[in-house]
Structures are given as C-alpha cells and as structure tokens.
Length: 323
Image (cartoon, rainbow, N blue to C red; front, side, top):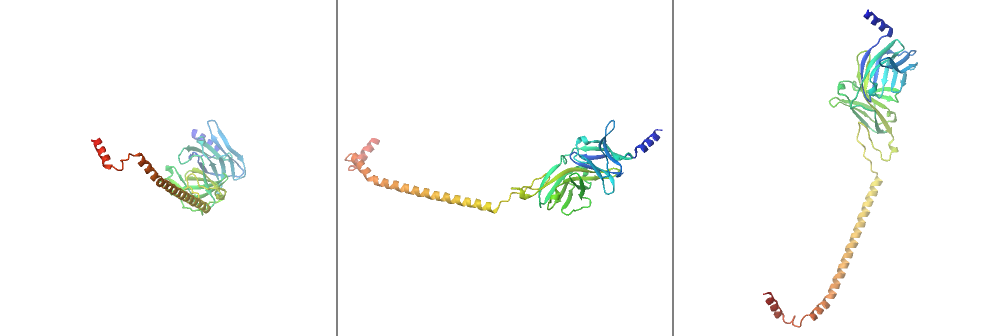
C-alpha cells in the first residue's frame, strides 16, 4: 500500500531528481538538467525550507532566459533547462527545486565550500595591446578534472572560450594546467576592449540526470588605455610583473646637464679658493721677512753687552748652574 502511494505521488508531482552540487564561496555554479525549456510554460527556481519552497524566480516568459540578481534560468543550444548562480555565499547552501510549469522539476542540494583559492570576485587591470598571464590555484580534488574558462558579459551573455581537455586554443587565448602545483594558467595576448568581462575558472562534473560546472574563481578584467595614464603600471590579482616606468630621452638629457653644470661650478669654486689661499700665504710670508731685522736689532739692544762677545763665559755659567 505504501509503495502504491509513493508511485501515485511520483506521478502527480512529476519526475524529481536530487543530487549534490558543490560550489565555492565567491565562485559560481551552472546546473544542467534534462528538463526541456518550453517557451509557453512558466519557469521557476525556489529554495526548500521546512514548510514550503520559497520562490527566487518564477516567470511566464517566452524568452530563452530570465534573471533575478545572482540567479539566472536559461536554455542552451539543445533547449535544456540551465541554472546559473553567481558569486556564491555560505547562506546559499541548501536544497533548490527548479523546473518548467508543474510537470517537470529537479531538486538539487547545493553545498558551498570555503576555499583559499576562491573568495570574492577579483579585479585585474590590463592595458590595451598588452599580453597578460592569469594564474589561479584550484582545489586539490579537481586535479584530474577538465578545466574550463567561461566568459560572462554583464551576467547576460555566457560563452565558453577555453578548456584543458581538447587543448583548445582560442586565437589570442591559451590555457595550461599544472596538476602537480594545482595551478591553472590562462594567457591573453593583445588585450582589447571586448576582453573587459567576467572570467570564470572551473571544472565539469558529469554523470546523473543533473550535471554541473563548478567555477572556483570569478575574475573581472578591467581594460584601460595606457595613453590616459601619466605613469602606467600593470597590477593584478594572480598576474604578472609590474612594468617599470620608462624614462624619456628629454628627462635623461636634463638630468645629465644638471650634473655637468654642478661639476663645473664646484671646480671653479675650488680653483678660486685655492688661488686665494696661495695669495694669503705669500702676503703673510712677505710680512714675516720684512719684520725679522728690526726684531733682531731690538732683541740685541736689550741683551747684556757681553752676550754676543763672551759666549764661553755664558756657556760656563749655564753648566755650573746645571751642576
């Protein structure tokens, strides 16, 4: 009887599938279901609580996408129902139900992990025409997973540009995966204005009726024109070496002229000072020679008359006094 009741409830509510989805704080998830996106049916996503399921999005629309804040419902090229949740927060963890109308729905349990490789979306600066390298660490459990890079333009247009499975190189973009270091590297050459978008770095989790991408890193690339900056520098999260300021030829010439003039002035002052010292020395020496005879004659006049005439007697007096 209980089994029959469960079957009846299943048929009434439609097929329901429940699976775990792993996301990271600051990152994003894209959930892909087997539900067909019918234009004439309402689309919804709600969060299950103890009593009911609180609507996040519920809309009757013929469009291929509907969005409310960080949540977006849309269809892919195969007309499947997809859910995008951006900039995950710990409070986003829980059970969600989404679907089309009242017939088809899926249930997933979202787990939001805190990881040092993720966090709030980072902003990276680059200049037009520059070649940049973006690197980010990924969780160890994704070592063997295929890595994907997604481009999101204002949360509206979603485009996959790179993956490590096919070694896909997209014109100016290239990707590499260092599994031993758990580091994903993306190179962008000749940066352009159209590159100013959100970049999502993540992995694919297949299997089951609900499959998903888990993006452990969101990053916004801010592109500027170097001509608008007096001293352009390159700074970024997970990036590159800062470019040293370039000294202009005029600045080099100016600094050299200042040095030469300073040396010349100092040399001239030294020569003038040396010449002045020589002149002072000569004047003093001349005065000394002019004053010497009068000084000797004055001294001779003051000495006893027998000082110069009787040197032997003077020496004898000194010798006796010493004894």
